[in-house]
Length: 168
Image 1 (cartoon, one colour):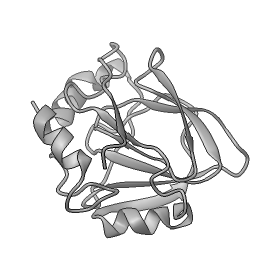
Image 2 (image 1 turned 135 degrees about the horizontal axis):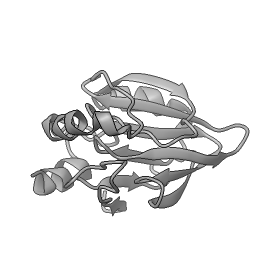
Image 3 (image 1 turned 180 degrees about the vertical axis):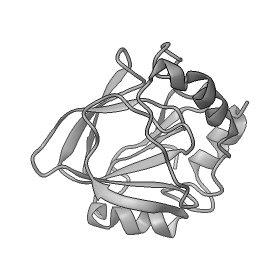
C-alpha cells in the first residue's frame, strides 16, 4: 500500500484544485484486473460509475472527489490546470482527484477507456473555471466530505490516512 504517489496543486486563478488534499496515483495497482476496474471501484464503495474517456478540455468537479481507473490503453492527462503536471496512465493505474482538481486529456491510445466513480455514489458537476463560478465552487470544494473508503483498498488504504491528515 506504500506505492502511492501524491501530488498537490495550487489554485492557478482559473482551476482551484484542492487547497489541502493531494492527488493520489496508484501505478499498476490493477494491472491484471484492469477490465474489472469499474466493478472493483463499486465494491470499494465508489459508485455512480461509468466507462468512457476524459474530456479534452480543463475541467473539475467542485462537489465530489473522483477516482479514475484506466481499463484499457493509455492516456496523458494534464492535472492541476494549464500549467499543471502531465501524467501518463496505462491500464491498471488508478488516480484519485480531490474535489476541485483540474484534469484534461492531452492524448490517448485508440483503445483507451477509463472508469470513473465517486465516493458513496455521489452526484458530480462539471466546472471549467468560468469566473462567475468561483465563489460558489470554492465553498463547495471545502464542503465535500472525506470518503469513507479508499477506492482501491476499501475499508483501509492510503487515501484514508493521507487525506485525514491533510484535511483543513
